[in-house]
Amino acid sequence: MTLKSGSNLERVLVAGHFAVTVEVGPPRGPDSAAFRKKAEVVQGMADAYNVTDNQTAVVRMSSIAASKILMEQGLEPVMQMVCRDRNRIAIQSDLLGAWVLGIRNCLCLSGDHQSAGAGGKLKGHPGAKNVYDIDSIQLLSVLQGLGSGVQEGGDSLESPASFFIGAAWTPLAPPEKFRTIRLAKKVEAGADFIQTQAVYDLGRFKQAMRRANEAGLTDRVAILPGIIFPKSAGMLKYMQANVPGVEVPEEMIARLQSAARPREEGLQIALELINGVKEIPGVKGVHLQAIEAEHLLPELIEQAGLLPRP
Image 1 (tube, rainbow, N blue to C red):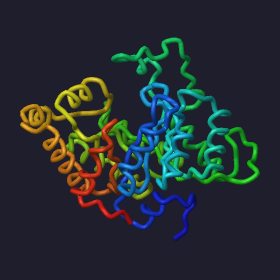
Image 2: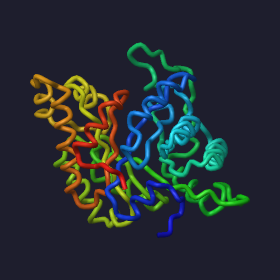
Image 3: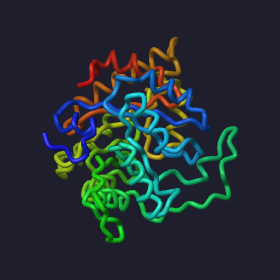
C-alpha cells in the first residue's frame, strides 16, 4: 500500500474500510484542560479527528496548536484551515509549520464570514477584515503544489509536504445541481477526501450522491457525509433556519419535539442516518459531530457498529 501522506485516515480509506472522523472543537481560551478531556472521551472512536479553525468566526485556540495537543494524546488530527484569516503567504507558512509538527491531514475551507462571530452573548469582531486572498478551491491547489514541492507562486520548496487533502461539500445548498460542478472542481484541484455539510434529508442526499456518481467523482474522491447528533428539536429548527445547505425534514423536527426522551430519540435518529448513508453508493465513511457534546458520540459510534476501528 503506497500512501502519499502516511496518515491513518488515508490508510483506512485506501484499504477500503468504512472511515469514521469526529470533530473536536478547540477551546475559546488558552486553557487546554477541557479540550484534552474531550479528546479522552472520543479516543479510539474514530480514524481521525477534525480540529476547527476559528469556526463561525469565533476566536479559539489555533487549529495547529490544538492538532498538536491531540497528537500528544494519541489522536490523529484533521487540521482545518480557512481562507478567511490569512493570505497565501501566511497559509503556506502555517502549512509548512504544521507539517513539521507531524500533522498530515488538512481540510480546506473558505471560512464563515466574520459577521457570523456575533450572536447570543458574543460580540464577535465587527471591525475584522476578511482576507480571502484565495478561495477554498485555490487552497486545495496550494496543498497539492506543496506536495509536489512547489509554492503557490512557483518557487520550489527544499522538500515537499504531501498532506492528505480534504474539502467540504454542501450538496443540498441551492442550486443543488451546481453543487456537483463545484465538487468536481474541488476534486480536480486535488481533494483526496470530502466531508459534507450535515445530512438530515436522506432522500435528497441520495439524489446528490447519484449525480456525483454519474459524474464519476466518487471513483476519484472519498466522500464522508456529515452527521450532527440531533440533540433537540430547537437545535434542528435553528440549523434549518440559519445554516446554509442544511435541510431538515419537518417530520424529523416533530418527532424530536414530541419525544418523551429527546436524547434517546436523537440517538435513534443519528443511528438511522448512519445506517442510511452506509447504503448509498459512493459513501466511504461518516463525519460525526456533536457540537460541544462530544460525550454523546461514544454510545452512538458503538451502537452503529463502527467499533473497533481498523
